Length: 159
Image (tube, rainbow, N blue to C red):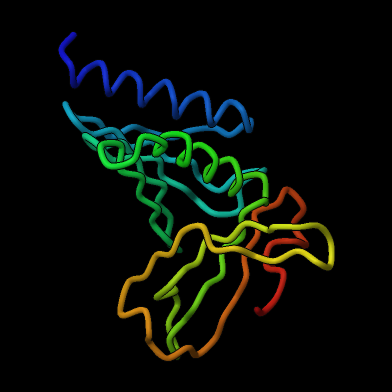
């Protein structure tokens, strides 16, 4: 097994452990010598499809709503941040604050936010910002998405 095979095996093990931790089923694998992508389709416990990707020195969580990248060579805590972000998304501890252009079906900007504090006093702190176009684009509408096993919590309202 060469060095890249070891990384692919490690990434596959990490993705499998994360999926099993949340009782999520994985679908398909796209793999190469320095690339691995596993899909988590919409299912009980996951209201949006996610793709977990490892590519050389990069871990990613991808969906139609955002892409979060964690650079392993630039940040010693990147793998930990990747795991915490994935767990927070699945468990509903991290919300997606979505920004749309007029008549757009997909957001141009998404903020991944975690609550600090409890109850009414909680403040949502942005832990990751993703954008498709210029971040100062005009906002037509905003939505907040929280993953939950409870269907009535799918979209909790406008920000």
